[in-house]
Image (cartoon, rainbow over all chains, first blue to last red; front, side):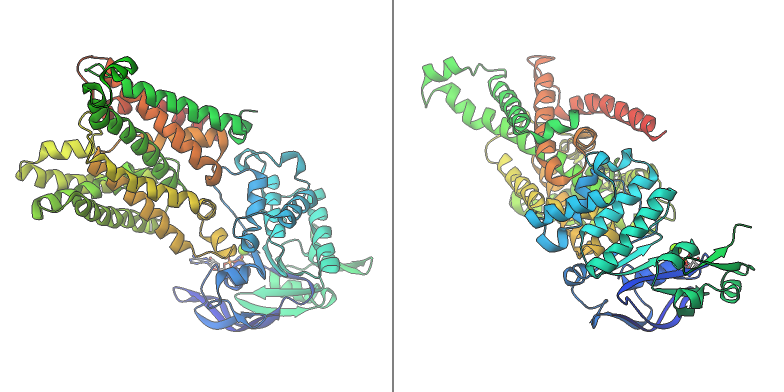
Length: 252
Length: 328
Ligand SMILES: Nc1ncnc2c1ncn2[C@@H]1O[C@H](COP(=O)(O)OP(=O)(O)OP(=O)(O)O)[C@@H](O)[C@H]1O
Ligand SMILES: [Mg+2]
């Protein structure tokens, strides 16, 4: 489990993550939702040790993320940020292969190659596997990053807006893929999502953040309600039900 | 298909063979006649053989070593800074090495060459670290701003160096450090270049790590590596190579800029694949430029730095225009 205890991050005088204590990373998919600036990315970055906490502690399976050896954590937890700018001209295949680095320290064995092939296949990247990243569309690049994270083959996956710039088909495919990874491989996935209906349809748990704090956390039916959405987004949104999942009607 | 070329063993062999051929030509071109024939006639103690051992071989070896190492240093700098338009000469590294060399030449003239080199490396490390710190302070980090900051830092360090060199009447010496010239390469001095070779060999060993560092701090951390340590490793390699080259033959402008850019266009930035090619192309490029410099005004020589500067500026301009085309 990922356990946060009184975690705080400040910029200047504002606490953008404010005294947060929560357990994340249950088996299955946990989605984090919230308005822009609510602190979702900051929270995820701190768990992924990309950002230092100002106070409080974060542990992953009992390992403190600030003191545990990086190589050890890298085999247990993978994190993908919201926006990734790469200037390096790597091929998609090379990039995905680097996801295996924590396992073989750069040497690729047969099982590594298998993991790479599988990740490339899962994300539909076969046709562009030999292309350089700067020759891809935004969505293809995002899928390449996802494939790299997948190839890392960790129990915990932290993904910040993985559906960024994906078309509808690839959004659905990616969510199904994550669902399958959770169900069949026992992955524990935490993702930041803006589309609350994707969150409602695919998550086991939803965490709603507001102004640096956890506003509510619970099952989709407990979080995706008109009342909660009003508090989180400041909008009156009707919530219906479809196929057992709550569906927010927010386009109208 | 062009990007597959680098992957085939045949291409690697061809590249190395071409460079070796260039090196052979380089050995036999010069004012005095050294030809395979004269070598055979004179025997092992003949004039030609002595010339070969004392001057021609060292020169060619120095060209190959300095060319390959400088190009690799450029590649590493570009990966660490994540900017295509930097190399040791545009990040204050070379200037800092020259300042260090000046300081040690004045304050401890009796120090052996290796000691002077160590001091130069120390200065180069500090200069490069300063550049990285400046970059971190930069509020916006555009592609063009990064090399500009480096050039500015380099000019400030260079101005200080020039000022003292002028006061101490060492301007000419300073010039030899900053403009690569291989006409004076002799046995006993070029051997230091093997240190640069060792540094680039270390870079080869750590090639995968350096590539990861080139992806940035977040990717590096996610993959379980310590970004700061990789940065330190890379900077040490760059500072060592730049200093050794300054101390032995003089800096070769543009080399670290053009060669990695050409290789990257064709093969990409995976250091494991790029480093051997950067080394081969760097060596070949320098050998060609040196030959041009030797035959153009025969029997006089044009310093290598000048030839590389002219050829390099043209190639670089082409790359710059090309990359702006690709960006749109
Ligand atoms: N480096 C920084 N310096 C100052 N403030 C920052 C910095 N990074 C983030 N912030 C602020 O912290 C707050 C939380 O940012 P964060 O990126 O965590 O939001 P988010 O919930 O991920 O939003 P979004 O949905 O837009 O991605 C924002 O108000 C942001 O302006
Ligand atoms: Mg965010």
